Image (cartoon, rainbow, N blue to C red):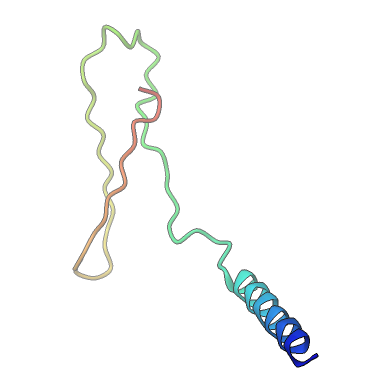
Length: 74
């Protein structure tokens, strides 16, 4: 009897912990991205390599930075 009660109590605690953990997860992304595109409609095979630049003003001196780069549309 004690073993069955103990098993049920542990199961309830484990389920409660997983529900609380799921509720505390942040659904908002940590960062948001914006595509930098050329807007060119030329023949992709014949056009030269493109260099994309994005400028921004930092409010404070940058101590550390991470850049995420993809090849969207290549």
